[in-house]
Image (cartoon, rainbow, N blue to C red; front, side, top):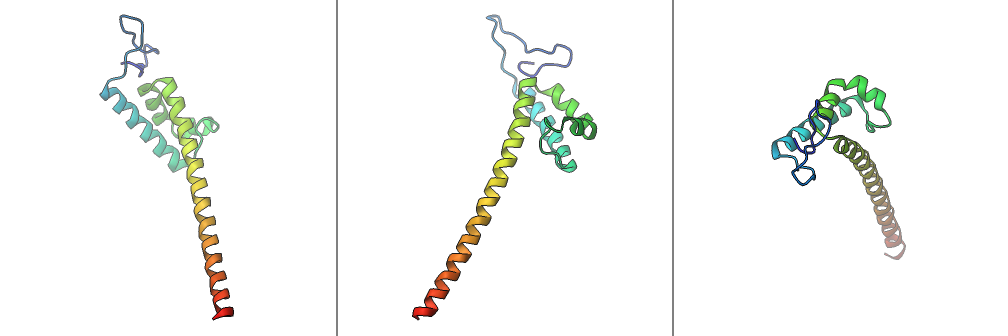
Length: 120
C-alpha cells in the first residue's frame, strides 16, 4: 500500500529499484478520512496536542487513533499531529491580532472624534 503500511507489514512497499512506492489515491483518501475522524474526536474532547496529551488521546479516542495509525504511515501520523498543533497556534495568533487591530481601530476612531470636537 505504499507509504501507508498495512497493520501486518509495518513498512512501505518497495519498487524494483528499492525506492518506496507512492501511495495510491484510495489509500491516501483512507488516511485522510481516518485522520479527520480522529481529529473530530480530539475536538470533541478538547484535546489539541495528541502528542503531548497522548494518554488522554488514547483513552478518549482509542478506536479513531487505531484506525488513523493503521491507515497512515507513522511519519504521516506524526506530521498530521504536529500540523494540527501548528494550525491551532496560528489560529490563536490570528485571533489575537484581529482583536488588537479592532482595539487600535476603535481607539483611533475615538481619537479622531475627540480631535474633531476640539477643532470643529
